[in-house]
Length: 218
Image 1 (cartoon, rainbow, N blue to C red):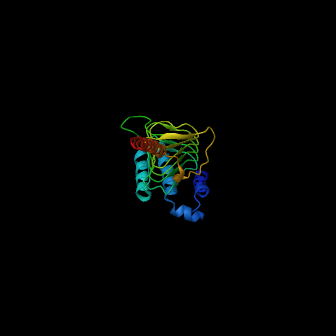
Image 2 (image 1 turned 60 degrees about the horizontal axis):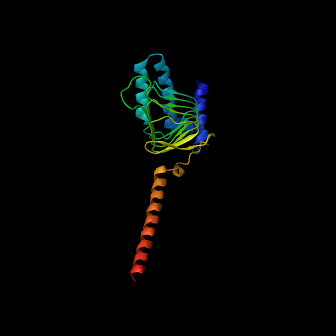
Image 3 (image 1 turned 90 degrees about the vertical axis):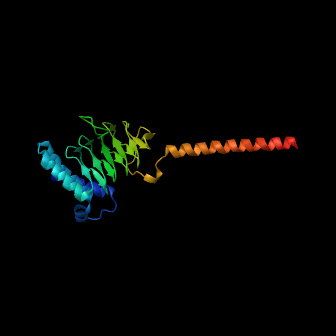
């Protein structure tokens, strides 16, 4: 357990350039507090101390703004950046080296029973405000762009953006984990640009046609 807690701290130093000292990280990082509280609550949940596990998770939610159901399974070196507004459902399974930003929801789609929340494999990054819903799998080394809504499985080494989420990059090799949020591809914006070019082309053709008729009339 101590090794696991130390790895949680090291994950912050690896990914957050603002982290300066161990004492600062331990005392001021709400994402770390939420993870540690969850590890305690999950241990109680596995031992069927459900009420006490939920009490701990709700206290953690009150102080950190991060809601993690004690039944969720979270792997090693899980990093929550900022974290306010994050919701992680009961049957969610998260692998190792996963990064999640503020406002992310790993939730269900209804009142179905059994496995109803996502499975997040190793080395996945989920950016600000993304919603990953239902019993789907985000496979290893993939990235979910800010504000995306993902309702279907995502293959390995993929980048997903949009509502609903669509795979815009999948090249078969591992994608670096330093996601540059403002440079994500936007398929909707690209389509609008294409339509603008087509409209401009049609306007030019119409203008040439009108000028030709005027010239012919003269």
